[in-house]
Image 1 (spheres, rainbow, N blue to C red):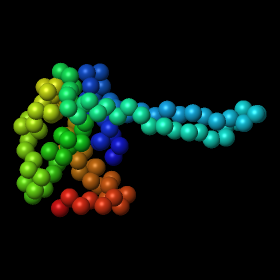
Image 2 (image 1 turned 90 degrees about the horizontal axis):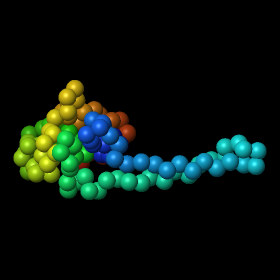
Image 3 (image 1 turned 180 degrees about the vertical axis):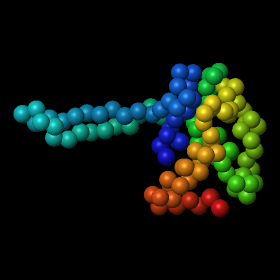
Image 4 (image 1 turned 90 degrees about the vertical axis):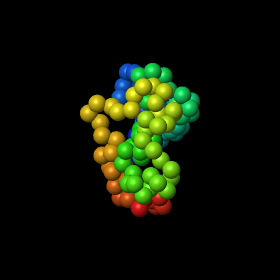
Length: 122
């Protein structure tokens, strides 16, 4: 689920995480781990409005457009990915050996398994 919403294709990696975590490990006086603090950071907001050549936006956009049924697409006024400027700026729609339609179905299945309410899924 996180990869769908937080990863994108870059020129170096087809599934690059666009977010990160900073982990601070806490130790006691005997140098035993006592806990840690994790801070999330760096969700690239700029990627939503602009992509460099050879890159594409967050996977979720392409997955939704490839995998949603026609009823949902009509309700949300969705078209094919090549009809959206934000999804074509990098001149990459499809990633070799990756099926956005299959990934979308996997995402929906994972969300259902976690009892995430899917209001828009018909």
